[in-house]
Image (cartoon, rainbow, N blue to C red):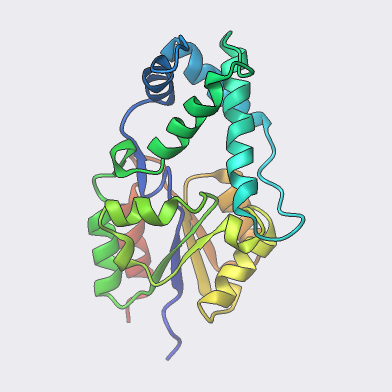
Length: 229
């Protein structure tokens, strides 16, 4: 009998989400350092900057510093687009505070159905892990959200040296769990990085959450039904 496919989850946007908008969080923390960010304008600037910037480059292999530099450059661009000067001396400490805050559980919360979907898949014998473009802060977040122990493997792009949708991210994940790509399934939320990337890398399937119609519980039920004996 063929083993059940290995199920990978994406992280942010799939398992958990921000407790407040980016604009609200940035403006609140930046105010402590003398920056005046308007929340809605900051939200818009962040969306524009995040969509336009390339993912971190790991030309020299896995690199924790590349993640932090990537985020610093992105935040600096957001500040500039909202009329604040990232060359002010206070920006360095402000960025440190932002980077630290978004590595803590208080910045995030699980989607309501995440725990049930994880439990349902495990109860039916599926092995599950995480495959994410998040940086090394992810493990602390998963621990704080009390779901880290549910996942056999947590695979992070900066430790792999490639970000989704690059095939290396998917192939390395499959290798780490001892499976062929065709024995793996990804549950994610990004049409390019998750869906197109996973299928191009040879994953058996990629399921995208599209809440409220298609949430993690719905996808878990679909997978359980498809692979029930």
